[in-house]
Length: 168
Image (cartoon, rainbow, N blue to C red; front, side, top):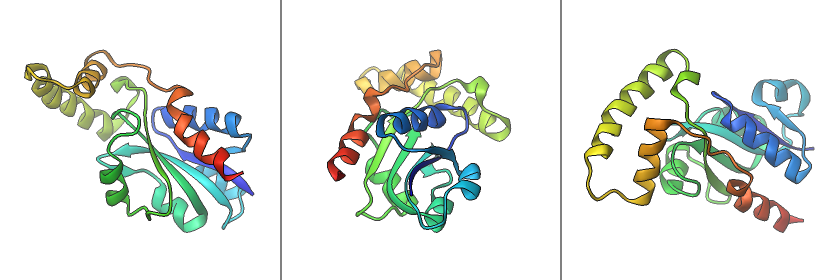
């Protein structure tokens, strides 16, 4: 069985998983649901949210399933931070890794995550705001921190869908 399995915190990763499932005609399950619905050892595409470079749920999914590709969803722009994310999560080179920019709304975070992101927005946001030679990526990050923003789109999944379609 092939499936898309995900772990989401504020909904961006779940939204990407649903978009990808529709595009690739694959069933979509949260990691919790999948344990009862997707047989161990099945081939999957795993999507997880990024926190401090770590992809939540990846290690657990990799123990249960044959992960054929990984998508990490975070604040960084789509297609960035690939080396750092691959290294931090010990994702083998043979497994394609994609990073996707998610939505950002600090109010959707809970507990310690909300506290940490409030601190990060205040400190990193202030540093970026005071920087005179910001890159376009830094401008985007600052805009996201200050104004929040919806970044989930089918366009961001283009590399993933092209990779998958090249297999068939």
